[in-house]
Each structure stands twice: as structure tokens, then as C-alpha cells.
Image 1 (cartoon, rainbow, N blue to C red):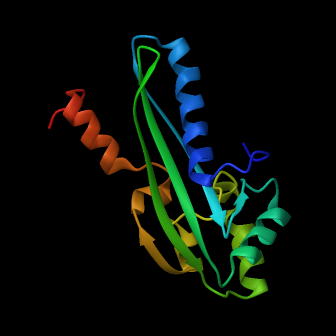
Image 2: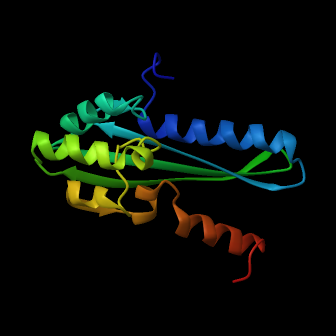
Image 3: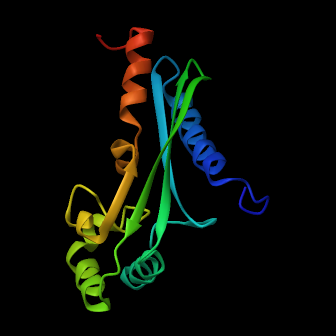
Length: 159
């Protein structure tokens, strides 16, 4: 999809769909939720950092700039895709010092290495941010309100 210059939202959506369809093969009678998130900085997609040095490079790229987090969620029932949603949040990373970013990554590496943005809004990562707009749960990686609404309408959870 990258080679075809697919839009970031389509990439997030497809990754979530592929995860759900794969899991649904093992659990054919289950309601399967798949989710994935991509980070788009002015058209460039970022993946999870491989190591602390790459995390620092990513945060330097984000510093003083606004990026988008696109969090896709899909539901598969009986091997069929029945629902999809893409939530979005926009985050501006403040112009923190090099020393702060390096210390931040060192202190938080075990948690942030699993995050595409090298931060977690529910932890110290919020200190990196100067502005957040959009869906909070999309920052966390799952557009939870829309997902719960759909599951309630389907009758899978009590309303």
C-alpha cells in the first residue's frame, strides 16, 4: 500500500481488517475486533521506533509540528466484515529540548516502544504535547465510543 501511495487512513483501515480476518479464522463463531493505528506527519507515515535512537529521531521530527493519529477499528462476524470506523486525533508536539527528549525516551522506553508516536497520552507523554484535538480514545489507539455504540446496537453488549 505504501508503494501505491495509499492514503494513511486506508492503510490503518486495511491493517485493522487484516488483523481481524486473521483472528476470525481461528475463532469463526466470535465477534472479532481488529484495530490498528498509523501516524501521519504531513504525508509521511511513521512506524513504531525500533530502538531508543530512532524514537529520539521521531520525536525530533514531531517537535513543534502537528501530526495525525488515525485509529482504525473493524468488526468481523462469521468471517465477514460488518463494521469499520476510523477515528482521528491531531497532536502538536511542543518544542522540547534535546536533553529532555533523550531523558524522556530513556525513562519511558519500556512503555513507548509499543507506541507509534513514541508517547502515551495517559503517561508522561502528555508533557510532550502542546495541543490535542479530536477523539481521545483514538490517541489511545481504539475509537472506543463508536465501537461500543455499534456493539450496543447489535445487542452484543447491554445498553
